Image 1 (cartoon, rainbow, N blue to C red):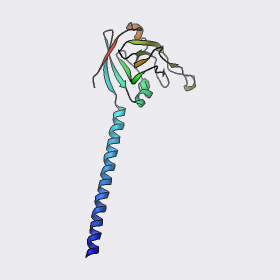
Image 2 (spheres, rainbow, N blue to C red; image 1 turned 135 degrees about the vertical axis):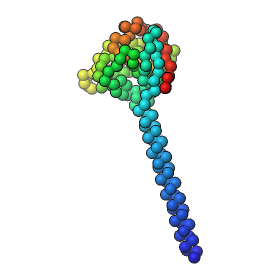
Image 3 (tube, helix red, strand yellow; image 1 turned 90 degrees about the vertical axis):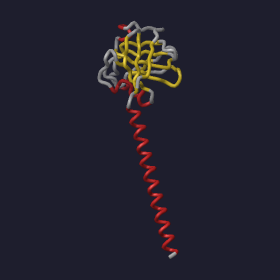
Image 4 (cartoon, rainbow, N blue to C red; image 1 turned 180 degrees about the horizontal axis):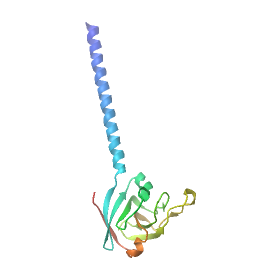
Amino acid sequence: MRTLTIISVAIVAAAIIIYIINNQSDDRTELQSEIENSNEKYHQAKVDVNGFEIMADIAFTDEQREKGLSIKDTLNENEGMLFIFQQEGRYNFWMNGMKFPIDILWLDAAGKVVHVESNLQPCVSYNDCADYAPTKNALYVLEVAAGFAERHNVQIGTDIDFQLIR
């Protein structure tokens, strides 16, 4: 009788352990899936450039920053991508994988333009792809349609405001 009780307790304990392990695994898988899915989604910001409104996807994960606008086939005048960094620095950008030309605006912590690169063309090949860097530190970078800076009178010192909308 004592052996049967010990076996019964062992079976119940094993069943509980298996249940806990399976549920923890499901929770981890579900959590990992949520994290991966949140990385795929872009939050957006409403960006005001000299009275003109842009809806910009926000790139704040490493993966989103690496892909940049190469995920898009076209870019309208009222669209862009806003890169947000943890600290100010001289962040380089290149046109690898891009399908269309763009302007790139580097902004300091106050939202003032510190550097502009205009009408940057997509790279012809990976090995022959220039990178572009600001002359001053920036905390934000805004990528917009080619010619945007000229059409909207963006220059060094222009104040660009933005707010998170989702």
